[in-house]
Length: 21
Image (cartoon, rainbow, N blue to C red; front, side, top):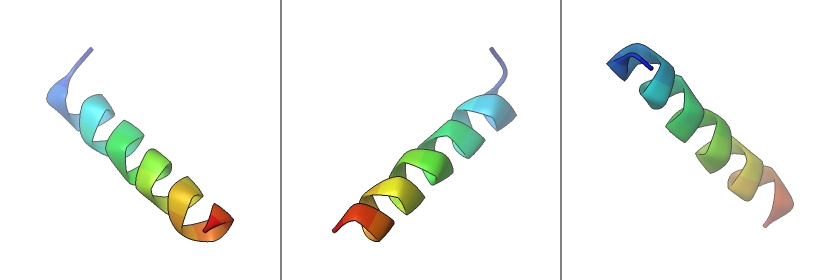
């Protein structure tokens, strides 16, 4: 897993939490 993939994963999680909350 590259750093870029990890960065996008973090963005996805943050965006999901933002939508849910």
